Image (cartoon, rainbow, N blue to C red; front, side, top):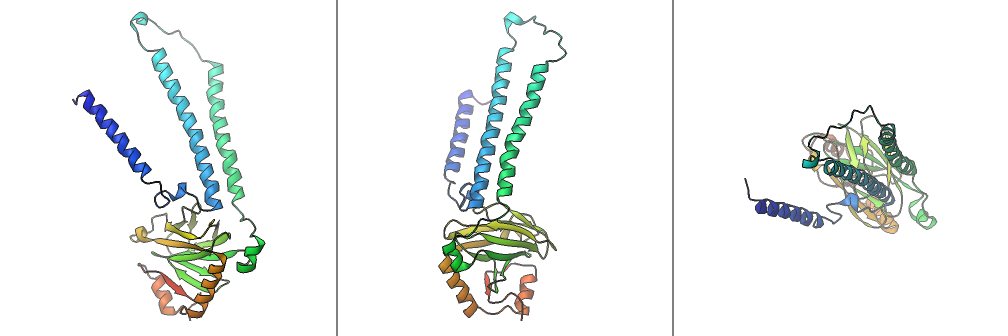
Length: 279
């Protein structure tokens, strides 16, 4: 058996290493869920923190009761012959430990339902921004093996493994899949949504300000799953409009050969096309 001092020292070292590791990973690169960069992610972040605090209170109460019981009713020399009386039940205590879990569930359910319904429909775009990019942006998202395809119907643009969006503008993502079911997730901007064949699921996200955010497939879909990532580039509305014009003027058209390569299982880099249907 290890000496007591060595065991305590090892425990302190483990705790110190854990704290150091956590404090060293506080940047958005490592903890994007805890560093929300848009209204959807922010609402979900506050819900996570609220739920964590509520559960922490429950755990704290359980541990307090646990230690109170084992200390108060521990075996002692002065009560070695104590025999507890026979009891059939305690209506007050049974009511209490039935009502408390119900109240906890209600306390979790009300804000969860409120946030869920709040995020069903995107907010209106400010008038000044709407003059540049329109009322909203719709992007069709297709999960392939193992890549992400983004189609801009109104702009007639297609990109692969990256997507550009205007900052400060709600973006409607129409999600589907041409292969295995997957999950579309941009942790810094909001929660995830499934992509399924022959289904059209919806998700809206918004970036507060220009920047680049990592997106990924969050459900196993085959051997290339680990590399199934994409970049979300939030541009200012003016820069986004300039990018659209540049792509429309300079990018190649989508061809049948290019589409076949995209549809074929495998990994490819970032691609840009000035059309969404092959010629």
